[in-house]
Image 1 (cartoon, rainbow, N blue to C red):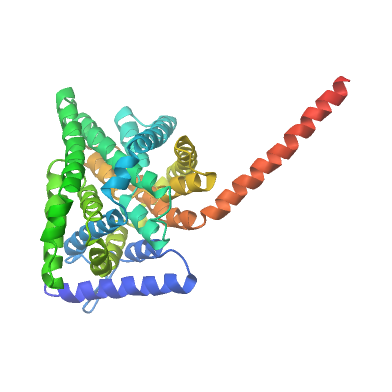
Image 2 (image 1 turned 30 degrees about the vertical axis):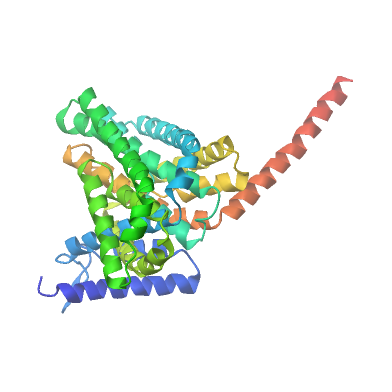
Length: 411
């Protein structure tokens, strides 16, 4: 721990180098942060005072990364409001159900086809279903799509996924860790998670006049202390009742977006979002050992292809169900295609339960591939949309010809 500050400085320097390289190449910065984290870590080396293994500073970097997720989701919430989200309530339930149904089913089919035992199949289905809220938030902000009509659906699906996650982890942990599960406990856990989210949104909206008065603080220092207190207390409390702390942060942002201080909060929070968000993606990369990924390459690639197909189909179906355009529907599927923190949690549960060791490298490689290509695909959705249009037009031109040939031959 003697060189903790120096190690943190080295980590920040590496993150900055990755950011500069991504800016030079005009690529999404997220894959570069993850890859630079992978390049170092416990499998790396130590030279003089420069310890690229980050062993002593690893837990602290991970903690800073957790803060980064909170700021990313908090800022995303600020871009919206409780009112906008409530108005989209029905479409969110429909979109979330469609998304979970398609991706979870594909996960089950994939695990079964891979010849995995039942518990491993259930873990794999969880790994391949839940998208990364941190990556989705970063992509939406970086691409300036927070005002797009489809973003409400994306936010809603993220929240819907968290309710599903609360239920699913309750079931899966009971099966994997104890060999049994209680229906009453599952229902209670799910009810608490959903009730907490609704309570924060409803009470928060009614408390807007009070918040306007409380936040009427001239000093920026005191103003930020109050905002940070709200953010960390509610996000931290949400974790104690099995709601992801990131969702707690999103809820705080949604509530504060209703206040007259929203622009001031947004302006002051921006540097924290960028700094701690970068550390999150770097810390995520630190958890991946590239030397352990070889045996899971085939499984991971197949899972990635299925996830891309599932997300595209889910985005199109969810978007069309609420009257969004084809282009907006493509954006939905691609924006939340990346997998991340929640998949890692599932893999950790499998490891604790003593399930097949292949699940660890499979999850790492699967998450890495989607975390890298997800933001790139999201950025280039216009080309996906154009390609889809060309294919549709080509099929449309071919079909009448085949029909007319059959008619002619019939005559």
